[in-house]
Amino acid sequence: MADHNGNAAKVNSPGAGNDGGRPESAETGTTDDTRTPDPSQAQDDTGAEAAPDDADTDQSQANRRAKRAAARAKRDAQPTPRVIEIRPMAGKAQMRKRHWGLLTAFILMVLIPVVGIGYYLKTIATDQYASESGFSVRKEDVGAPGAELMGGLTSFLGGSSSAGEADMLYEFIQSQNLVAKLDERLDLRAHYTAPYADDPVFGLKPGGTIEDLTDYWHRIVRVSFDQGTGLINLHVRAFTPEMAAQLSDEIIRESQDLVNELNATARSDMLKYAEQDLVEAVARLKQAREALVNFRTRTQIVDPQSDLAGRMGVLNSLQQQLAQALIDFDIVTQDAVADDPRVTAAQRRIEVIRARIADERRTFSEEDMAGGDEAYPALLAEYESLVVDSEFAGEAYRTALAALDIARANAARQSRYLATYLEPTVPERADYPQRGMIFGLATLFLVLFWSIASLMYYAFRDRK
Image 1 (tube, rainbow, N blue to C red):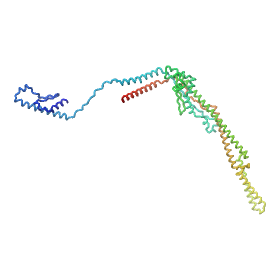
Image 2 (cartoon, rainbow, N blue to C red):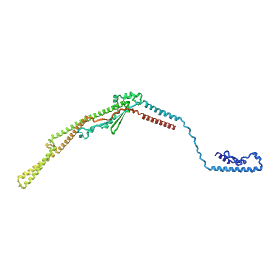
Image 3 (cartoon, rainbow, N blue to C red):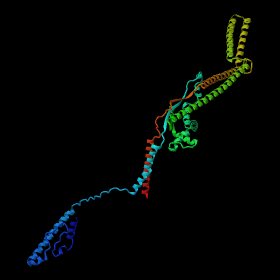
Image 4 (cartoon, helix red, strand yellow):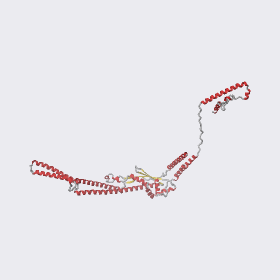
């Protein structure tokens, strides 16, 4: 391309045709057929031949220039080929300062801690043995004789449900009181502080307070409680298999003692409340019966309803007699004369019977049997009220007496008890600490921490 451009520049120069007939040749790539005549040869040529030769030379140079111009115009008319620039290949990657920084941070933040954790778990961490056990609180549903009179009072007097007592046991096993009792009985501090000199991570620090021991207790004792079934699973860890099983036994024994105390308290309260209810029922029954006796003494009536029935019988008898007297009067008047004494006697008998009926009816609303001022219906209503109170007091007394019988029957037996469905196991293999899981989690979190720190470093560096 450089050669063609040079030739084009020479063709277009203004002095090309005024150079004494000397032809121009390309700088590179092409060679003219006609060369510049040698001066010595020009001197040898005759004057007659010089003129025609110069004319031919000029003509041939003009033809060549025209050809080159046509070729250059044709070449310029064609599209320029696309030049693809090929970049040089990348050289071998080399470590830079930031790469060395990341590698150093990885070694310090991940590699060294992971190696240290693995070494500690493998050679220093003390083996721990786990004992499993399970139990639940059960309630006896057998009722005492006479419980059908209570209308379901037996279940009411039974106190809280077994699920509620299971909740109390769940909290009791994790309480400081239980830890203090077992420490006094089994010397928990001596057992769990023994490996602290070699294993400070999984051992208990000597000389700690009861709160420190309770916090450590929450690490070695795991309690799981199923609200639906009421089952309690106990998982206890110790540095020896015997200690793990013994500790599980003591926890179950203390739980049983707690259930027994709850039973004793419930029975005592139930018996006390039943006795109080019976005393109140007896007093109420006495009061109702005394009111009924006072009524009978005042009115001289043992049973107003029976007296009313008798009075109604008298009234019915009088009415029957009145009907018969009227019939007799009609019979006498048919055959008697005006002054017949039988007619007068019949009339007198009818008047007496009617007066007697009126008096009997008047006693139902104006006076009682004793001749007092109270109306008989009021006396009857008062008597019925006293009878209802007496019957209700009697029913309450019978209910309270049955409740007392139930309370005494429940006091004679254990209504709630601890049912152990899984006896404490004696482990033969140390399953703790879980070295694989701890090592894997530690590695994962250290790598995540290093990655986050590296990203934060690059983010701050890019913002500067």
